[in-house]
Length: 108
Image (cartoon, rainbow, N blue to C red; front, top):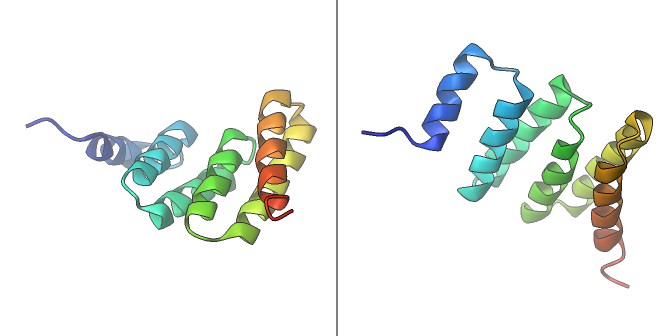
């Protein structure tokens, strides 16, 4: 019987528990399953071990929004924006700023 993607990722993470790519993929798998809290915890782990993994800030913010944690999402995006500025990652900076502004000004 074929393993699911979730099972494959969990197996790979046993040998490389801090791998940014594998943990990010696991978080996205959890999101697809509707497991927002597991996704959030996994993305927070990525940022803890790999704060330069700027794409994770974007997805973590959206996961927090899905979990009705708007203020936390905005705070994560602010951190990601600062990190992108430090690292001069213009593409991720633009994505984070757009997401931040959209949510910040959605009530206006």
